[in-house]
Length: 241
Image (cartoon, rainbow, N blue to C red; front, side, top):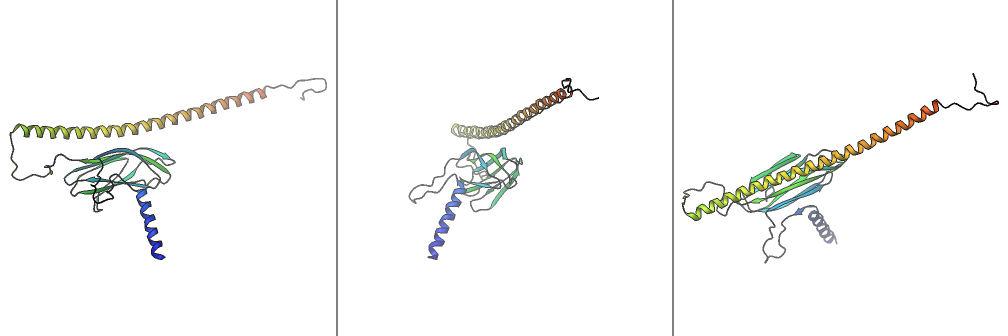
């Protein structure tokens, strides 16, 4: 009976852990099927609850360029602290780099093939959620490019080699332009939410001040009217000296 209870507890813990941690590229269930690695680029927004954490896994081959950028777009709740903590780990679980700011990026060259872990923690906000925009993925320059100086590499003046080198350069420039475009998108959305928040703040504050001004005017008129209110005099009711 005790082994059955232990096994059921382990199954429940595994289900809870898999529900909290979102894997972008899960492993295949059957051994005859190929490993599903997913896409090489992701960009989306996610809401992290107060004091919570969200983790993602991204598959990357060796000799790839891994990039990870984030920006807190807005806060939801009582707290207005936009700082979060972002970490990147190797497939073996070793920490690569940590970033603690409103916006940041973690870039590195992958030294091994596997699933790299990315985690975002909202531990500084205990009374407010944060909406974070994420952009991460892997960029490969070519099958033979390992970002190291190769010994005895020959420079060929062939037309195909020149076309291939030009294509790689164009692809690299497009990738960097695409990253700058995503940075601009992140900043644009953060500025949009900031402007929207300020707009709502100014509107509600103006309405409150207008109500206070109208109410004070009504009260002033009421008391002034009472000040000049003279009672009617008759033979029986005369004002006292």
